[in-house]
Length: 97
Image (cartoon, rainbow, N blue to C red):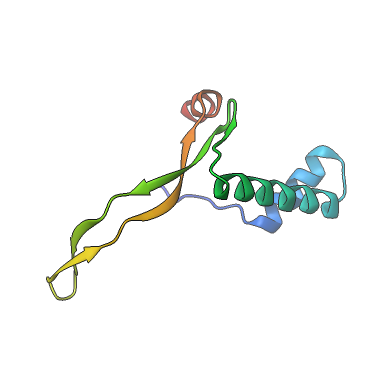
């Protein structure tokens, strides 16, 4: 099993700034705007499809019965909403190589 390398937000902004030849503040402004727009659209009932990259959508989890791992007791887990992401074909192909 290999250890997964991580790129944090600051490192991501620095690399994208360098790759695009724009300031870090411009990249950060864009990234914040992107996150805000995706969040706004998901909370308004839309899905966000970025062709080749992936699809963000709200998924609803049905209520279910779970087991508390500490006590072994059954417990009701209520329905909930979460964000799902389905990877796009282009990204999937790039990662496979």
